Length: 172
Image (cartoon, rainbow, N blue to C red):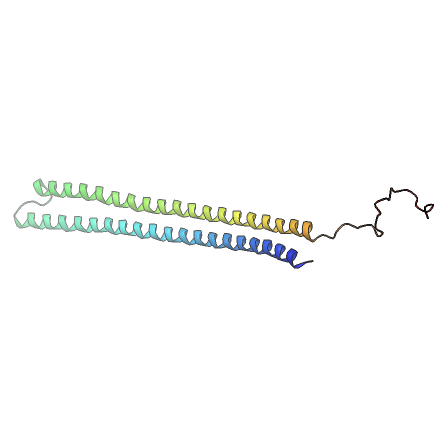
């Protein structure tokens, strides 16, 4: 086998290996992006949960202050304007609390969906790279067969311009 044939086949084989490693690396990159997306969505969800908890703490502080103010002023704390203010505070805090809980759920859902998209993209890139590597290996085999195959057998005696394929023993 000549060195040009060897270089041609080696080039195709290296191209196949490069396609495989690129596919493997792309899959790893997409996997990392998926994990980063999950972590980011969990961080956002925790922020929303903390905000919801802060809403409840603030509500408790407001209600406690209203009750204390009412008792100090000689008003029954669970009736009248004090009760009305507490009811309005509970309603607003409940709405804010539920909004934050829903936002936390949505952050987790969005992060999970995006992570799944990255996972699918990684799988697709990997399969594509493997197919590319396989086609390059097939091309290397084809080139080897076409370039590196043994030449066809040639007649051992040279033919003459006047050789018409007949019996030449009578000619002398």
